[in-house]
Amino acid sequence: MHDESEHRTGAIHDEPVGTMGRRRFMDTLRTLGFGALSAAFLTAGDVRAASDDEVPIVYGLTRDGDEGELRPRRKTVPSDWYDDFRTAVSVHRALGVVDEEDVATSAVAPGEFGGSNAAIHVEVTTEEAFGAVPEVVEEVPVEVTRVEPGERDPKADGEPSAPASVGPGVPGSVPVASDGLFGTLAPALRDPGDGSVYFATANHVFDASDSSGSPLYLLGDGRPRIGTVRESFPKADLVCVGPEGDFEPLHRIRDGSPGRVLGQFTRAGLADLKAAGEPLEKIGARTGHTTGRIQAIDGLTCAYGAICKRGQVKWGRESDFTDGDSGSVNFHADPENPDLGVLVGGLNNARTWWPGENYIWGTGAYHITETHGYTF
Image 1 (cartoon, rainbow, N blue to C red):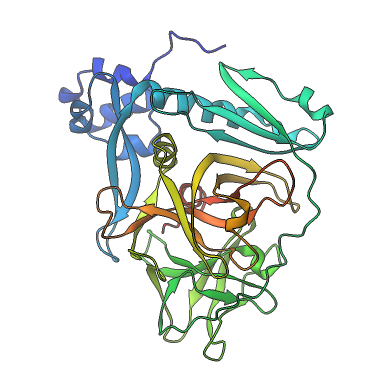
Image 2: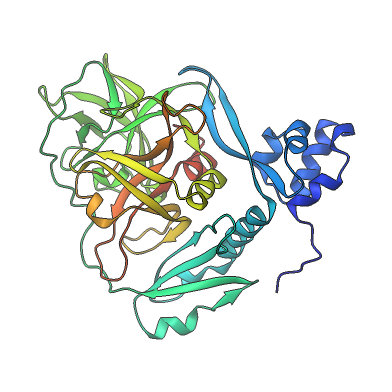
């Protein structure tokens, strides 16, 4: 059971943060459970600005212009809500229920501000699997749903019906293709280490576990080759594509309003959006613009293919996504500058196709950054 005597993040208000050196302040944050991102970017001023029942979090990472380095976006949230959420994430990662036979997916549903607490959602494909999943772990409820096993192959992405017509600068959400399959381009992906910018889409558009060296084409205007896969990340269902010729990846989403991509949400930032009832949006090459609520984050799915995928975001409805939309991103207007641009939540790559659940899923942008270093 959860030990109520252990440190809580709200205990930061009992510490003399104003007199601490930077290293001691960072160590104190980590000791109280704030995590590496908070320890790296929060300041003593952020702590002092929070009320006694609140704590500061880093909810997003943005760039100082398209060429600038990443900068943190901070806000305050109720400390009890944040502690409840981080406990659920920790419990979920240790639970490992998808290792059990007939367990398809699991994820964390963040709690509401002043409402229900966080929970772990688990999908099983047999009645017998219910017995393999505990009802509560460290006071975190585990909610189990029975779903029917799927038989559809999610790699069979169909051709988008509206080819793109763009210039050398290519935004996200336009239709692209490999030699045999079709998908949607993500906005520019950046390597913060050297500032290089790449095209990106779903790895399964190439129908291979390692698609390195494969060409990527832009649909329309003669189907030009815009780049070659530089790195392939099957567990994130992501490819990083080096641009060729005059083609340039843009930090933009085609037909978005606004369409400029300013950065991305963190794990805590997505949880905060869920708690506030804020939706995500996407623009796919086939289904176009859709909006839907966040259902769960930090998910793990083994529901299809031979690879289990971590860091998954569940949101929206099955009807909001179809073959050819894979590789699009979900996003939300920048909370501080909603008329200027958006922050990315994650890369969409699949939808449910079985009775019992109804959502889109994809790899969280925070997971891509934590695992591979790239940022939107």
